[in-house]
Length: 125
Image (cartoon, rainbow, N blue to C red; front, top):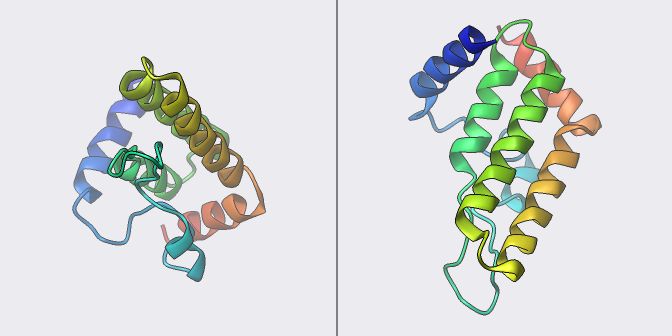
């Protein structure tokens, strides 16, 4: 397990600078509606959670040949939850908003859209 996580990390770092990795449906019209940095406090502009790295690592996980989709999705959600806990744990309102985004993104990758994205990523390898 540790070896596979290390390999995933190395692959993620290799792809980090590439513009094709992002939150959303990989360049489709949907990606413009799915923010990489969603707002967690509408009253305080600039209070966002940065899921760019998390989304990129999830995309890379999907792209690794024969990776288990559920593993990728579980890691994606755990990383988002951890980010919400560490960045907004002391502010209940912002933490709750951050978790709403994490839950929404976590549900989306487990939907038919996520299944399609996984199959497409696996087919490219």
